[in-house]
Length: 214
Image (cartoon, rainbow, N blue to C red; front, side, top):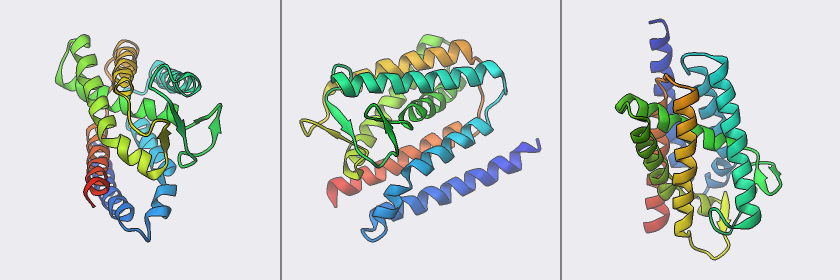
């Protein structure tokens, strides 16, 4: 029970954090500064998720690292060949790159699929339904995020448009990661999974609408 006040305080902090971030992105004067903060915001989210993860088992953390590394490797293949997600390249916004892919990308795959899995596992018991539900969450998230990512220079599509295969590959990749979480990090719980994923989704939704209609 001692953890609850800390969780509540962190949730309030995150709400304020995302409100300020949303306004910062919408204002032309502050936008460049907030774009540079994207890697730090991602790392903060991941740190909080790992910190509040339960139960704290070594096998769970090993799965986290494996998924982050595998997510990075998949992106390297994607960038080098164009066969997975389509033809795209990364900008400089997400930080240092290795083999053309920002090193934070693998962490981002862990962050999204972990949060979606924790939420799905609370809703349904079947691992196959968990995979379907969590992967759908991730794809919907990507659909909202993609225009914002291109607008802020996170990555660029060679042909100037987002191919359908990108969303299909996101679903397949996410489903595999959800399977790994459900099998090898079974029983994962996290009071911040839902708040963080919802705040991220709302953040990108607002910015998506902003750059589309403003």
